[in-house]
Amino acid sequence: MYKKAMSGLMLINLLILFSFLCIKGVEGNTALAKPVYETKLDEIYTADAEKNAVGIVSVSASGQRIVDYQVVDRELKYNLTEKDLDTLLRIVEAEAGGEDEEGKLLVANVVLNRVECDKFPDTVTEVVFQQDNGVTQFSPVKNGKFRSVEISEETVRAVERALEGEDISQGALYFAARKYADSEKMKWFDEKLTFLFSHGGHEFFTSPY
Image (cartoon, rainbow, N blue to C red; front, side, top):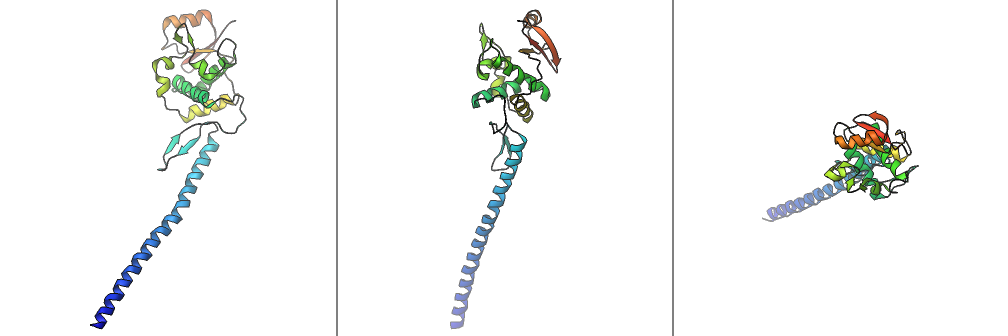
């Protein structure tokens, strides 16, 4: 009887000890895994940050890539507020989402050319939302596409190039997609503006005066 009681007590002690070791083992594995996971996220973020100077690609807890954007420490010709940067990225995506990177760069160039021109407002947001006799300057502002676009990495790169001072626009202040534009509007472009060149689906113009 005594031996049976001692055996039972030893068995209980062994079960308690085994349970304790299992719990500690799980905690140890979690502690070891956590810094490795955090380091991996840091590596992904750093690599993406180096790749995109204006558009920073962050990583969610699940590891999924999420496109976000902010200005980082780079030598820029144009230093925009967060609001103006968001506006520029959105209008480039909305107007040139189907164009190549140079086509996107050209749209960014036109917006920035207007900011620097005395005939237009002094900020990107004011330029994009400007109205002439109640008519918006950029159709995506009117039809709502401006608000619904998802910014692509190519758009981010194009805007970055424009903010660094790369300008391939030949001073263009206007652009239009003749295929989709209203005929009366294109008539005004043809009669009142100076045609510069075409790229992709857009024609680029400047003012003759």
